Length: 527
Image 1: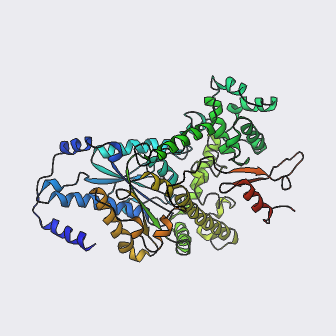
Image 2 (image 1 turned 90 degrees about the horizontal axis):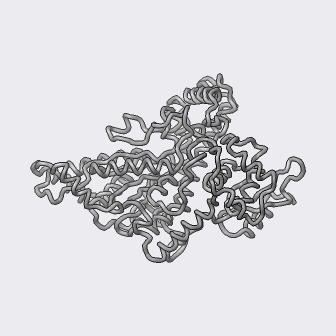
Image 3 (image 1 turned 60 degrees about the vertical axis):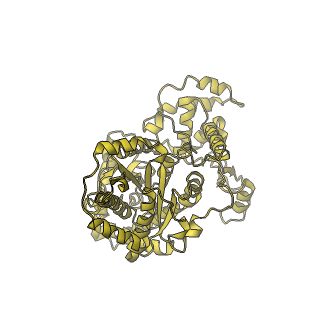
């Protein structure tokens, strides 16, 4: 840190010189291949300061370029003159509703431009899926690179960021139907009849009828169709059906979408891409252009649960003061407008559109007249507030799980050690932000932009860094199948009769036998 400080002072004392023309910067850009171009990502749970760090890094890059322009030799000048932030939060893409989505304010931005923030009308659009956001982000990144600017991808929807930076591992969704937030197209794929004829067991008449009725179903089918739809998926794509719970109609419908629209199984597409990934890994090309899009630097801000949870509780309390209740009332008006207009978005579906925002579902049982500060002391209000805090803490835990289970191994597999990678930053003590977060981040960032050797990730980030960044195995990273896991039906726990409700035990790790033993010794299992 002292070296960087001394260097900055020296730079400020040097005489100013004329900056190179923009045409020279554009020619410099053309000499890069896509995988040489830098992208920075700032990830972590809610409430750890991702936006704050992103803004500070963008400001540093601009200062760094300005300082280098004042050096005596133009050869030492950085190619990258500034940076902008690209939002990677699935709820912050919506216009308005800034409190419930925890958007960064204009004042907090301090002049740093943000892209893909507040651009979707919550009244008219269901939102963006991963594929649409990745496509838009690629355009924004290309635009920034062409202007000699560094993209800083920031947000809590980590799986979006993962599929942007490391594109292999999951097939692109179909271009029609649910991926476009409209019902199934009226006409199926021309190859659908041949696909159905190839099934080892033909569809029953009722399943055939249900398949061809898909265009007439709403995006959120009625509950009584949940089991028949899953049974239909089991008939046409059993591997994928084993991965989804029969009550998860959203995923079941998306899987049926590929069969209807393209006449193929989604599971087969996943398997094909996994074979491609393994071949790339076996050839030692995991860090090549096939495995990543850019030269990647990821900062993971982290605070342990015992420190983060009280911080998140306090953040929810502060949201009440900032106007959360006003926004909840606004969201109910939006829901009424959408119901009246027969919108494709179901405001009663808490996994749909802006209504996924934590707080909307938790306060849904309260009448609108109770969404006022005067109701704060009441038991129903306090119960809803407690549920919102619990949901926020649970969401933070799920964000950490994605990073450790999904992203961590992919970064290790597909980045070049010493040139890129993921670095943990200790955001436990916000009073020591500059020392524990900003200073080490800038040190790594400078080396990254200078194409110098980066420090070992475990050497910064505090005492938790070695364990949190370490993989669970030695040797080459293990490529986990997208279709790993499954489900089995516990007949003893299932309900039979007219109101049949099969009890599915879902498992993603280990074996089916281990999942079965775990269920049978648990309290839920009926003995």
